[in-house]
Image (spheres, rainbow, N blue to C red):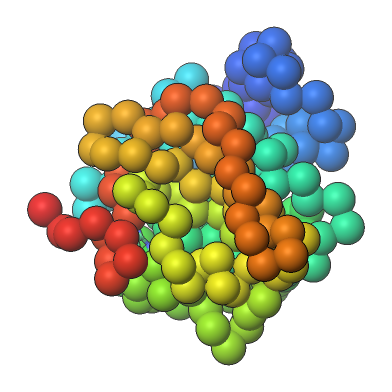
Length: 214
Ligand code: SAM
């Protein structure tokens, strides 16, 4: 199967028509091999317009949602990004192509291990990963220029607000189990300002400052 053709069609048919216009982002989505981040049985569907299972009842998000969240982060000249919810590692790899350092946290060690092996194989030396409760953030490495939460929360975990740099930006799906509002949060003079982006559906953010495990 020629994945590079599927990748180009994904960019041309799913991202550009929906308004993803940042050239650097489009270039990165044309480059990063999404099929390497999905389980063997789903590789043929890796570039399709929907999420896919990755094990542990978790998912790799739809390509457009990954692109939209990346674009909303406004990554020009950004140094340090914290991602909560490594999952397959695809979003981390996209970020690692665009910023200096990516810190990513996953609660399932099985997923974290798989992603870690891939990061090594693909040569992403600027991704640092840990297994644990990402709602606590990564205090020792804070503050972060940007924070991306790739699981749904009822409210923004307080440690993440504290670990966001002044002038920084955070993106998070906010809402209950069935649908959420993708929300961009900016920190200005210690206060946060939230703006809704669109409706979305994510798996829950489970942790001390998130939801309870079901
Ligand atoms: N960014 C991922 C990717 O590119 O594949 C998609 C992530 S998936 C939609 C959400 C992930 O968040 C799951 O892997 C889930 O285990 C993880 N997660 C949920 N709560 C978490 C928490 N408190 N800390 C870290 N990871 C968490």
